[in-house]
Image (cartoon, one colour):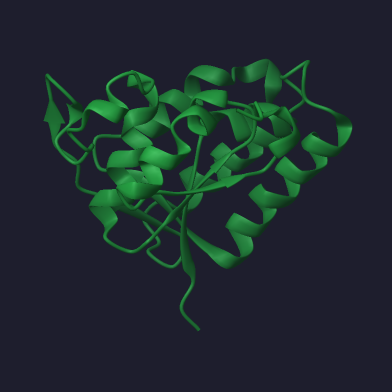
Length: 164
Protein backbone atom coordinates (compact mmCIF):
# COMPACT_ATOMS: atom_id res chain seq x y z
CA UNK A 1 0.00 0.00 0.00
CA UNK A 2 1.35 3.42 -0.96
CA UNK A 3 1.31 6.03 1.77
CA UNK A 4 -0.01 9.49 1.04
CA UNK A 5 2.41 12.39 1.39
CA UNK A 6 1.95 14.99 4.11
CA UNK A 7 3.63 18.22 5.14
CA UNK A 8 3.16 19.55 8.66
CA UNK A 9 3.26 23.25 9.49
CA UNK A 10 5.16 23.96 12.70
CA UNK A 11 2.03 25.26 14.40
CA UNK A 12 0.54 21.73 14.46
CA UNK A 13 3.46 20.53 16.62
CA UNK A 14 3.09 23.57 18.88
CA UNK A 15 -0.66 23.09 19.30
CA UNK A 16 -0.27 19.35 19.94
CA UNK A 17 2.19 20.25 22.70
CA UNK A 18 -0.24 22.66 24.36
CA UNK A 19 1.72 25.72 23.28
CA UNK A 20 -1.12 27.72 21.73
CA UNK A 21 -3.35 29.36 24.33
CA UNK A 22 -6.09 30.16 21.81
CA UNK A 23 -6.41 26.50 20.76
CA UNK A 24 -9.22 24.57 22.43
CA UNK A 25 -8.76 21.18 24.05
CA UNK A 26 -10.48 19.67 21.02
CA UNK A 27 -8.05 21.42 18.67
CA UNK A 28 -5.12 20.05 20.70
CA UNK A 29 -6.59 16.54 20.51
CA UNK A 30 -7.09 16.80 16.75
CA UNK A 31 -3.51 18.04 16.30
CA UNK A 32 -2.18 15.11 18.32
CA UNK A 33 -4.30 12.70 16.28
CA UNK A 34 -3.09 14.20 12.99
CA UNK A 35 0.56 13.85 14.04
CA UNK A 36 -0.12 10.24 15.00
CA UNK A 37 -1.78 9.63 11.63
CA UNK A 38 1.19 11.15 9.79
CA UNK A 39 3.54 8.80 11.64
CA UNK A 40 1.38 5.73 10.99
CA UNK A 41 -0.19 6.34 7.59
CA UNK A 42 1.79 8.95 5.67
CA UNK A 43 5.18 9.80 4.30
CA UNK A 44 6.29 13.09 5.84
CA UNK A 45 7.83 15.47 3.32
CA UNK A 46 10.66 17.76 4.35
CA UNK A 47 12.92 20.07 2.37
CA UNK A 48 16.45 19.04 1.42
CA UNK A 49 17.87 22.24 2.98
CA UNK A 50 16.50 21.27 6.45
CA UNK A 51 14.62 24.57 6.71
CA UNK A 52 11.55 22.80 8.13
CA UNK A 53 13.59 20.75 10.61
CA UNK A 54 15.35 23.89 11.86
CA UNK A 55 11.96 25.56 12.30
CA UNK A 56 10.67 22.59 14.29
CA UNK A 57 13.81 22.54 16.47
CA UNK A 58 13.44 26.24 17.31
CA UNK A 59 10.11 25.48 18.99
CA UNK A 60 11.39 22.89 21.45
CA UNK A 61 14.24 22.75 23.93
CA UNK A 62 15.50 20.09 26.31
CA UNK A 63 12.87 21.05 28.91
CA UNK A 64 10.08 20.05 26.52
CA UNK A 65 11.10 16.43 25.93
CA UNK A 66 7.67 15.09 26.95
CA UNK A 67 5.81 17.44 24.60
CA UNK A 68 4.02 15.74 21.71
CA UNK A 69 5.74 18.05 19.21
CA UNK A 70 9.17 17.18 20.60
CA UNK A 71 8.33 13.48 20.38
CA UNK A 72 7.30 14.00 16.74
CA UNK A 73 10.63 15.74 16.15
CA UNK A 74 12.45 12.75 17.66
CA UNK A 75 10.46 10.44 15.38
CA UNK A 76 11.59 12.50 12.38
CA UNK A 77 15.19 12.35 13.58
CA UNK A 78 14.97 8.56 13.83
CA UNK A 79 13.18 8.09 10.49
CA UNK A 80 14.37 10.87 8.18
CA UNK A 81 16.59 8.46 6.23
CA UNK A 82 13.81 5.86 5.90
CA UNK A 83 11.88 6.65 2.71
CA UNK A 84 8.88 4.70 4.00
CA UNK A 85 8.32 7.41 6.62
CA UNK A 86 10.11 10.56 5.41
CA UNK A 87 11.29 11.99 2.14
CA UNK A 88 13.28 15.12 1.42
CA UNK A 89 12.18 17.22 -1.52
CA UNK A 90 14.64 19.34 -3.47
CA UNK A 91 13.87 23.05 -3.18
CA UNK A 92 15.73 26.02 -4.59
CA UNK A 93 16.25 29.24 -2.63
CA UNK A 94 15.13 32.35 -4.48
CA UNK A 95 15.72 35.91 -3.25
CA UNK A 96 12.45 37.21 -4.66
CA UNK A 97 10.04 34.38 -3.80
CA UNK A 98 11.86 32.59 -0.99
CA UNK A 99 11.86 29.41 -3.06
CA UNK A 100 11.78 28.97 -6.83
CA UNK A 101 8.98 26.42 -6.43
CA UNK A 102 6.74 29.02 -4.75
CA UNK A 103 4.20 30.48 -7.21
CA UNK A 104 5.19 33.86 -8.62
CA UNK A 105 1.76 35.43 -8.57
CA UNK A 106 0.40 38.69 -7.17
CA UNK A 107 -2.31 36.91 -5.14
CA UNK A 108 0.43 35.30 -3.03
CA UNK A 109 2.73 38.31 -2.57
CA UNK A 110 1.64 38.77 1.06
CA UNK A 111 1.84 35.09 2.00
CA UNK A 112 4.03 34.54 5.08
CA UNK A 113 7.68 34.31 4.06
CA UNK A 114 8.44 31.61 6.67
CA UNK A 115 5.63 29.35 5.43
CA UNK A 116 6.73 29.43 1.80
CA UNK A 117 8.99 26.43 2.38
CA UNK A 118 5.93 24.25 3.04
CA UNK A 119 4.37 25.36 -0.26
CA UNK A 120 7.68 24.84 -2.09
CA UNK A 121 7.90 21.29 -0.74
CA UNK A 122 4.29 20.56 -1.66
CA UNK A 123 4.69 21.80 -5.22
CA UNK A 124 8.23 20.46 -5.60
CA UNK A 125 7.12 16.97 -4.60
CA UNK A 126 4.65 16.77 -7.52
CA UNK A 127 2.61 14.27 -5.46
CA UNK A 128 -0.39 16.30 -4.37
CA UNK A 129 0.85 16.36 -0.78
CA UNK A 130 -1.45 17.93 1.79
CA UNK A 131 -0.19 20.61 4.18
CA UNK A 132 -1.55 20.35 7.73
CA UNK A 133 -2.29 23.65 9.47
CA UNK A 134 -3.84 24.10 12.92
CA UNK A 135 -3.87 27.78 13.87
CA UNK A 136 -2.20 29.97 11.24
CA UNK A 137 -4.86 32.14 9.61
CA UNK A 138 -2.50 33.20 6.81
CA UNK A 139 -3.16 29.79 5.24
CA UNK A 140 -6.89 30.50 5.44
CA UNK A 141 -6.52 34.01 4.02
CA UNK A 142 -4.62 32.63 1.02
CA UNK A 143 -6.43 29.28 0.67
CA UNK A 144 -8.14 30.10 -2.62
CA UNK A 145 -4.97 31.40 -4.26
CA UNK A 146 -2.96 28.44 -2.98
CA UNK A 147 -5.63 26.05 -4.22
CA UNK A 148 -5.50 27.64 -7.68
CA UNK A 149 -1.78 26.84 -7.72
CA UNK A 150 -2.36 23.22 -6.72
CA UNK A 151 -1.68 23.46 -2.98
CA UNK A 152 -3.94 21.37 -0.73
CA UNK A 153 -4.42 22.39 2.90
CA UNK A 154 -5.97 20.41 5.73
CA UNK A 155 -7.30 22.82 8.36
CA UNK A 156 -7.01 20.81 11.58
CA UNK A 157 -8.81 23.47 13.62
CA UNK A 158 -11.13 25.24 11.17
CA UNK A 159 -12.99 26.94 14.01
CA UNK A 160 -9.90 29.15 14.52
CA UNK A 161 -9.94 30.40 10.94
CA UNK A 162 -11.68 33.61 9.94
CA UNK A 163 -14.94 33.14 8.08
CA UNK A 164 -14.00 35.72 5.46
